Length: 237
Image 1 (tube, rainbow, N blue to C red):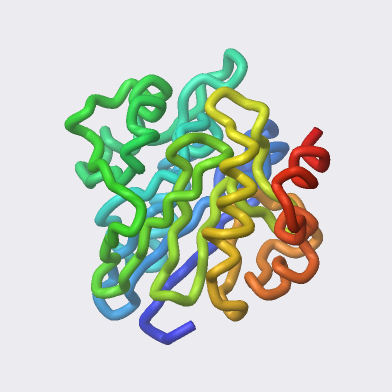
Image 2 (image 1 turned 180 degrees about the horizontal axis):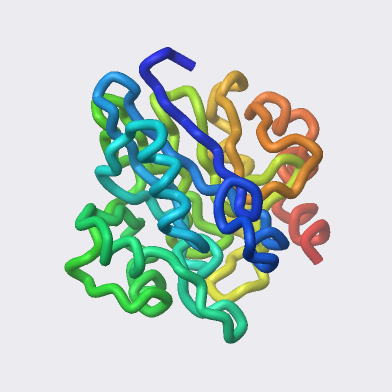
């Protein structure tokens, strides 16, 4: 990672939302992606404890210039989680007037989950680029977990993968909007093309290690090693 690129991985229940037992159980990661020289950063999936996340930015003297949303599920952007109200994008919007970048196919879900308006969101297609200061972040459309799930390739060096790819696993496809065949194509075609040395930064702390590399996942993650769609369908049940 070049010195200019700033990436901070924050774990729910440890680095923010410390008194929230549900947040600790969900083990969401929130990421700060930024430019050390410009002192600017983007927030990835700020939920559970908006003030706590912003406090980390302030301590690091980073100014938040936007939000990147991986997908519309409430543990990532706020909303109703089985009857529990989760803080997220709507609360952040009350504190900071910054753009919220979502994939075009995910916009309706984000609006329904958070109550935000169409004017609150900046819609993107896969391949678009957003800047954190002068650090480029490419938006990679990775359908499967949801129709508009997206990952973020930071300066070609790190992939923030949300609920698409985990260390030794992948996101569920049995929730509303999930598509098993699309997930197979995402993992074995879209993401498999990334260089082996790209750092993998997942959306949850589900494995022994909180990070990996794309090369390691291509070799060891069973979800990326299945060679045919027929075998994948059997694997996913």
